[in-house]
Image 1 (spheres, helix red, strand yellow):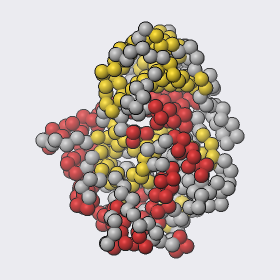
Image 2 (cartoon, helix red, strand yellow):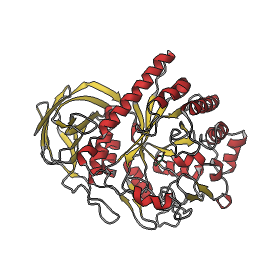
Image 3 (tube, protein in one colour):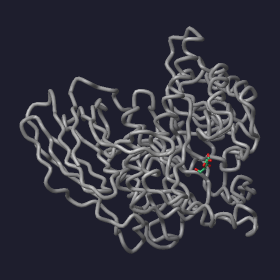
Image 4 (cartoon, protein in one colour):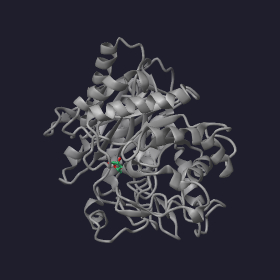
Length: 501
Ligand code: AHR
């Protein structure tokens, strides 16, 4: 099978915001406890944080991490996580039917973020609490001193404010599972008033209002229209979430699901444009896609804890999806969609980062290890920064129940300003056939292949583990750049990243 395409140096979609490759840590399962924090671990630093995990987060070069939830945040009292650790309360976390020891709070997480070389994106509780707790938290985190909350932070050991820029106004407030779920009108009002109070403190912070928890929500997309009607001029981003699954065991359908993601983004881009026109506003609002990932492998196993059959465990193994080779292809396709829609999607958070539906796993007391999906995320984070380029593609495709003509090749292109390198991320979704791909390179001058990584030749259900990194990239062969063309043969069911210098 053959496919052809053209890419031109002048056809820029957008300059990618590096925060497109962010992630997420929630107080959930073992993300925090025995994930990032394990004071007895042989690699623990002086704050009790696992250095082996920090090293892997640094390897991924994660630009921003959302914290502390997620569903957890909607019944969380942030004050429980400050002050002397031996005096912090143990609370019942209603979101995940777990006990929360509060041994990690904002101070510990901020220290970890600094050690991991990442920025914090904080969420406030608009479920069980509201404006008052949000403004107090903001003052605690960002005010230099001379006020009640900022002086309390200093007393608790942190002299300088953290200066957190990005704040989420609640989490998934449309969801019936959310503590303090709201109608779009109720949420629109409280989000507007909270934004007003937070901006009265600091106009320069960036605020994220909740969009739909998924395009399957019955209130989608009217939710976005109502919420933006209340908040458009007070916020900067609307958040979207989407999780992908292959419960049906249908690889072709599964790997086409980013067509749905594309529709979801396009629809909300339309709602944003509609609201902007309705408000006669000059302001642009963008999408913060602050939860996305494959999530289904662990759903059945989690019922035990989530339905309360184990009481209220602390740091139980929850949402510990073990990703396979098929998921590598899926994550590659999702990241390609974000690159292609980087004109409107500015922030993205792979949900989540450690142990909970995560690219990084840990064994308590033992090693940290890379899941299969670590690698497409790693490559996008490292080489997907710069200008996303428009690419025309002429490629045979297939149809599913929800999309027509899904091309067998899923491709995105990024030109990095720093070194002028041109990077292509390519997934071949075809299950039997290799595809000979010829890409015309216009306006780039003479180029040669400087890096070629491939993940292919694995069984779809192959996984990694603490002892074996079975699914990992290796060097690609046979890609040629000459006479203004890139020629490469993509193996069936393969992920490939090719860089031209
Ligand atoms: O990431 C896991 C959960 O998924 C989050 O807590 C919630 O926001 C979403 O439903």
